[in-house]
Amino acid sequence: MKVRNGWLLLVAVVLVVGSVLVGSRREGAEFAGADGQAMEAVATIQPDYQPWFGFVWEPPPEIASGLFALQAALGAGILGYYLGFKRGQARDRRNRPDAGD
Amino acid sequence: MHITEGFLPPLHAAAWTAVSLPFVIAGAYRVNRLMRDQPQTKLLLAASGAFAFVISALKLPSLTGSCSHATGTGLGAILFGPSVMALLGTIVLVFQALLLAHGGLTTLGANVFAMAIVGPWVAYAVLRAGRGLRAPLAPSVFLAAMLGDLTTYLVTAGQLALAFPDPASGIAGSLIKFVGVFAPTQLPLAVVEGLLTVVVVNFLRQYSGDELQVLKFSPETLAAEARS
Image (tube, rainbow over the protein chains, first blue to last red):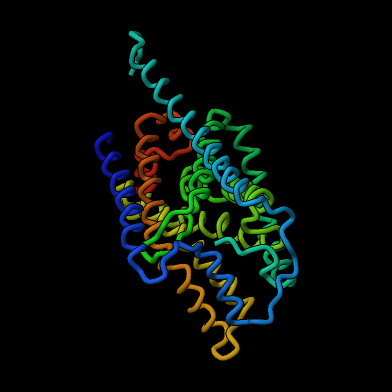
């Protein structure tokens, strides 16, 4: 299991890094967000469409990156806590001499 | 798959909100009952929500030279059933709409429908089908998470096509255009999401047997179910 998970993660990393390398060779590649591209497509289909509602609050760009990091950190923190907790629990079970299993 | 604030006409925005609301309420009810009946799975539920949080925060580059993000909703859907993710996915989307100017409140219903309802249901259905066919667990989990991710983006393309039919070629023409924007970017990212979901499930099978047992997720139980 250990080894296989390592390989799976390696494939995932290779895929992401490979994407950067292959993607940046493309003409005009600037890794724009697909969501934004879709909204541009809206503008080509219906040039006169005006968004009728604005953002409640839009963070300044520098702050936005921090908030994205916060979102990732919250997720990774809780996930990491869980994974570590379960590993510790399993180790405790193994080390208990009277463990039935 | 985030439709930007204000980018759905009011009627569409209201309709998608009306469609999604019952699912989110049912999800909240389900989470509540889970906490009461199976409190030992609380931490795993938090971890599943956290997985969606971190995965959907990462904008990953794609082969196409554009970037997008995975959804992370497949994991919770296959562990807890799809309805739970309606609530957890909505929390993610509200966070992004309010704090990150990503998605929006008027488009929340549509985005919830794509990411927190259809994606999880597809992931769940694919996993069940895989178990029914007695396919090995890891490939089933991979396909479930990957297809859940892809379908989320196809739903978004469909929602945009319905709202903005092409003047010449109609809804179908628009759909092709929007799918063309999302699908090539998303494909490699969906594969990454599938791989990461398998990694977490592998870990759970080794260390979280007790919780998987409670959730009737352990391979033995599912295999027995498929046989009967």
